[in-house]
Image (tube, rainbow, N blue to C red; front, side, top):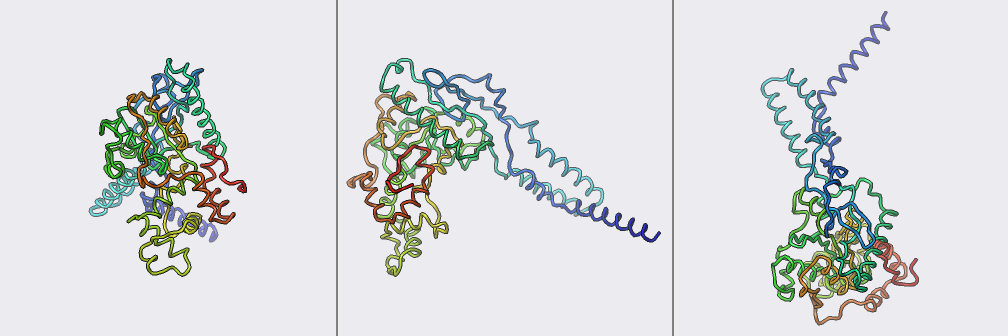
Length: 431
């Protein structure tokens, strides 16, 4: 009899503890556990029926044709599942039952506290990152015009583009796992928008980005000639819109209907170009922010003047900083991976140009989008115009200052860019 009473007491005590735990559970914690972000159902299968062929880009459903690819434009509309995501509905039901139980027991100030907590919960949900689900896209170029199909030059450039995109897709498929294919505003933060000709351009520094911005400004009617636009106007004038400045509907619409393009450059050459520009010339940002930290960490017996100004960083010290997993100062877009800047495994770019064939690739792109015939890509050097451009020969001279181990680690650092954009190994002793 005594054992029975004791067992019953333990059961009652356990049940009471469970009830107390449920009532004390913080709804804010439940929100964080169940709704890391609001996911939108784009309804791709239903929208296929409304697609039209266009000269556009974006995350598109691809169709291969004998002459090229017809771009499929998606509908602008975003559909919420019953206006609220499933997980959020489940959370709301659970929260409602908790709040109902608490209302029966609390009065006065406690009821006001519940209302405040519900407002806090709605605020948390509203401020959660909005994730835009992109599950399919067109992988191919805008279709060549009928009059261009017999032009050997355009046909050759078109096939080069198809091959570049094939290699990029295969690399992504082999090394990247993007089954969810979720694109956030962060992924499109480096993409500039030109609405008149429906172009999205992902900025890759030291790969002709200043002149590309000039071209976009002319296309948009902000200037009559690329020669009229100064460097500071290009980079600090805020004349061009970024894709992450739009709401989720605007981002989705442009990714699916605009022509997306990026231009890249041989990784070591791009790195040396950035080093020469930022550390071998006066600079009131890179010297105090990066230079001082690099000299302080990697230079033995640094002078007070060097520590004070951050000027005179050596290429070997810069590489030490780049390869250090515990960098004294963070990364910068000028030497970051293209893979991180433009997310080519998430965003299916319609056109991939190379700095090494800039004039030919750029003018082919302008031809494809139907730009004015008198608009060509500018050839002038944007900064330090009296200085020789960074070439393969100059790049090799800088990397000759490094040990074989440092060259190998530098190659490993940019390995995905070398692989994805089909660049050869810059030194024979690399593996």
